[in-house]
Length: 345
View 1 (cartoon, helix red, strand yellow):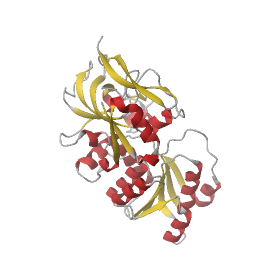
View 2: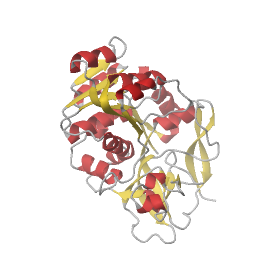
View 3: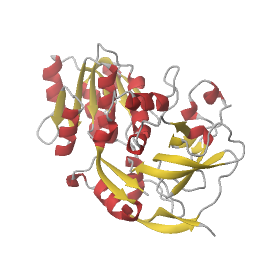
View 4: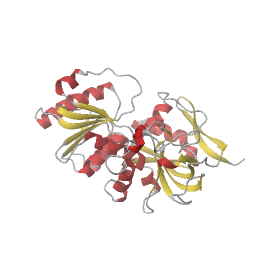
C-alpha cells in the first residue's frame, strides 16, 4: 500500500499528522501534489469544535498544487499544471449552474468529497473546482486565491462603486482582502476595524483610508463624525458576531448595503428594527461563482497576476506539514501576530 502524510483532527484543539493510503483519483477528479495551503477561519471553527470535525479525512481548501494524475474523463488538464482549488464542486447542469450561480448548485459537495483535502501531501479535487494559474504566480500567491475570491464576490455583492464609502468590520484575512479588493476597485473611501497591532499595520500597508482600533475607538462615533451623521454606503461584516452585525446596521446609511460574510456558527440576537427604519439592504456572500461575465476565482487570479493585490502581505507565518499542530495553535491565537498561516507539505 502506498501512503502519504495527512493532518487530521483528533478532538478539540487537536490535529496531527498520520500516514494514510494514497489512492488514485476517481472519474472526474484530479490528483494534486499540495505545494502550499492556508489555514482558513472555517478550519479554526472546526478546530475549536464550533463546526463539525472529520476524524478520518484531512481538510484544508486554500490550496495551491501541481497536477500529478488525471481521473477518467478529465481531458483539459495535464500532468504538471499548477492549479488552485475552489472549496466545493458543482454539477454544471442544474438551474443555478446554468445561470452562473454555481455556488448554489443543487448537487454542491466539498471539492475533495470522501477524499483528503489540502492538509495532506496530496489532495484529490473534482475538476469543476480547479483553475490553472500562470507560471509567473508563486505557490504562496496561489494559496491566497481562494480567500481573495471570497472577497471579490463580497465586494460584488455590495455593489459599491467609485462614488461610495465602504466600511469593513473585522481585520482578519477576509476583512483585509475585502479592503484590498475595494482599493483595487477604486471605491471613494475605505474604513476597516481592527483589534490587533498586526491587523492595523497591514491595513495601513493595503491603503486603508481609516483604521479604527476597536480597543480604544467607537466605530459608530467615528463614522458619525466622518460622514456628518449620514453613514457609509456599504458595510462588509466579516466577524460573524451579534455586536459586529449591530455595528454594521448602525453605521450604514439609509438605503445602504450590508454584506454578511462572517462564519456564523450560532443564532444571533440582533436589533432588526434598524433595517425597517433605514431600509438598509442586507445580503450575504457565499464563497464564489460568477459575478458578471467572469468567475470570482478567475478575477482573484487576475488581481494577483496583474499586481493589483499583493495578497502575500497577509502571510505572517509558514510551517511544514509536520508542524501542523503548532501552525493551528499560532493561527488560533492572534496575540502571536498571525493573520494568515500557511502550511507547506
